[in-house]
Amino acid sequence: MARKALSIICILVIVGGLTVGSAWAAKLKIGLVFDVGGKGDQSFNDSAYRGLQWASKYDISHVEIEPGADADRETGVRMLASQGFDLVFGVGFLFTDAIKAVADDFPNTKFAIIDGFIPDKPNVSSMLFTEHEGSFLVGIIAGMKAKADGKDTIGFIGGMDIPLIHKFEAGYKAGVEYVYPGCKILSDYAGTTPSAFADPVKGKELALAQIDRGAYVIYHASGLTGAGVYEAAKERKVYVVGVDSNQNHLGHVKETGKNYGLTSMLKQVDVAVYLTVKYLSEGKFNAGVRIFGLGDTVQIEGRTYHGVYYALDEYNKDLVSADMIDKVTQAEKNILSGAIKVPEK
Image (tube, rainbow, N blue to C red):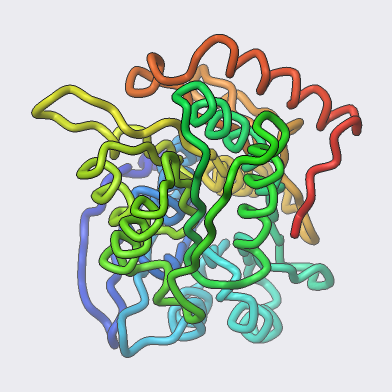
């Protein structure tokens, strides 16, 4: 009888500048290479890992790799492919060139890339998201919160200044303007290189500068850099909208019980990873492009998840009013019907 996959990291070693974690079992061998910020970012990378944990019930073995400072992405992807892994994930658009190259050399290995566009290889699945639509919903909440509290300025802090992150910004701004025309919207980016997603010090610096200019709610789409945004917000008692994973708890101040995590834009990378493993375990693999959006739902462990959505939990239930939820619900229906066209840039 096959052994069930473990859901914890059993081995942690350093190989050629790569941090490798593994959980071994019997059947499908799944590899995952993290993006900038690595495991523990409580955002994008952790969402991918969560999906791998959900998929453990499909009797898999898995290995996770964190590229170190001296290792490139192709090294990690190629190492897993050469060891006979059935499926290798690249977590982030930065893996595009690496997976293009390695997929041709290992045609019998399946590859999946989050946020990358590789539409024409029979062994590659590209998983994209309608980030602008999810951002529109949290923009509504941010705008209504600022308006209700008599404030006239909100902010956006992106990680790397690239078109993908511009989608978050565009949707957010449109959502704010939908409920609060004339609200001032500040915007800053942490940098122009991948390290912009892993710089909490810069995140805090940008957030404090926006707060000094009146920002009352700040939406960050910056990976680990967002940890600094939360630090600034808690110090200055303003609100943050998190990204990718549910980050509402990061706005909680234990000493006072106050919560400054207004909501989070959920980009369900975990769902994409889970479904890809599920389908492969069933003998199916969907090569090409798959887009996850508001209308895509799946039941996992008794809960319903959307491709993109917003977070509501015990940390922000007193911050997000019934009026906000009603407005968001109506906007969601209008987006799905086509009545609202959310801009991507």
